[in-house]
Image (tube, rainbow, N blue to C red; front, side, top):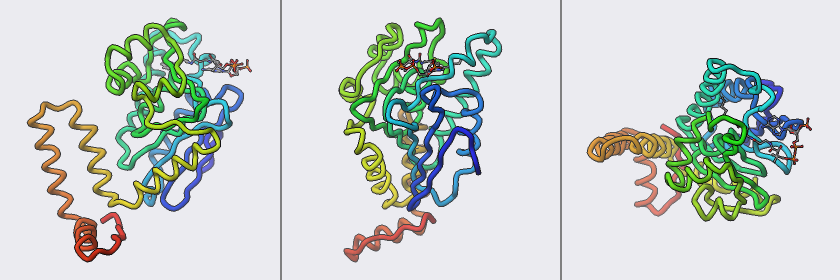
Length: 258
Ligand code: CO8
């Protein structure tokens, strides 16, 4: 599939999706959101891990496209917000892990995109923030929900109410990212994490993601039951037999995703 604003690569079961709109520091307009949604709907079945990054050295995604939003009315604003939120929810519920490799500005919708991913690492020049209130809006791609979940309500409220941008080291300290690396090392580091995920049983990884996502919102007893059910389902897979047999034989398991 050819896209106007996305570059796509696939190597050893790892897909890399690069958002590329250099004139606007990769800001997300409706077309780009549509392309990302289309890409996710058609992602190759062989992919076991997806890395999302931004084109260039300056910006991951500098937010939703302000020029597209400037003249929206309330109904159009809600529709635009829903469009982004739906695409980001697709990322969150994709049955494979998604890593955000944040290579610069991750502001507004860019920070929200990173937060919809399962794992975030960033380069030392990255900047995060939710500057929306300075534009007269609020985070509209599920940022109020995910930022509070990730870093706690107090810090999320402060960042959103002030609109302050933070540097990579502060993002690491508050748990918004898992690791910071030199810009030149970012993609290699993301590939390394992806490769270590790909070495594991794909269905087990998918079930683990599903459990962690689902259990967050469930009462403890239901969450425990949810995990027990998917734990049981693992024993219906060939990869569980392969993995445990390999352990007992002191050999390396080759998982097939069945
Ligand atoms: N939208 C549109 N264009 C953008 C955006 C953006 N978010 N960010 C940057 N650009 C454009 C600039 O307008 C500029 O274009 P031009 O060259 O034609 O003037 C070009 O990118 C380069 O930008 P700058 O010259 O400003 O570069 P600087 O290095 O000086 O500054 C910054 C970089 C700090 C990233 C600066 O561009 C900036 O502050 N950008 C806006 C950041 C921002 O506020 N993002 C949040 C947007 S709101 C949002 O994301 C809401 C999400 C939820 C939507 C809900 C829908 C209802």
